[in-house]
Length: 237
Image (cartoon, rainbow, N blue to C red; front, side):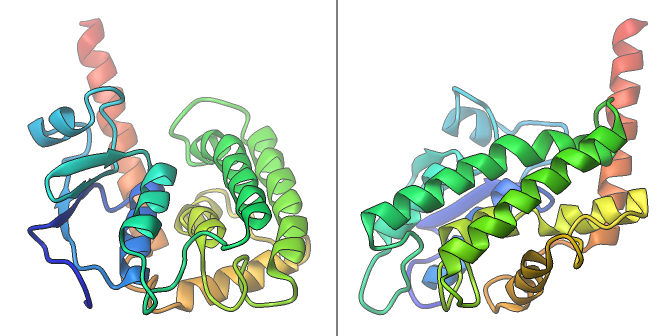
């Protein structure tokens, strides 16, 4: 890639995490080379604990040895740290547009993760209610796409940006949930613009190599659920 090197930029994360995927997409969009440090599922490396001692969670971006934590913060950092005339913007240039995109990014992260985990069987809950929560959130985001895209291909316009990356990071898990429940999540009838946007997003050159396969995500979810159940049983003994 165009700038940076593996020693200078590292990503601590897991391949199945939508929040980690965001960081990788942002770096790829900027043309920044990076080293990916895969965390072992269910464990936290010494590097992770030292780099993010507050939340102890992935992702962490290490830039010149200095850690940046939390995916939305990292996206904004990448946009500013690797700015230049030859690199695309991640956040909109206009302050109002930036505020709107941040609002909808916060909305997506508030509404989607818990409902998706319920659909995937990772946490207990009413799957029908969870499906409706996802559908309602996507209906709102369908309207947001119409307003934000201004008739263009992506939320950010003619290329992907901040809100595209945030919502797009869930697409792999949308597809995994569809396999698990045999129900449409990105429904071409209820949310046709988002369904078409998702196809364009997945075909983008910055996305293709980092979008996880739905089948592999289903297998990952099943293995993780089994490991969590075994750990819970062991703690009760």
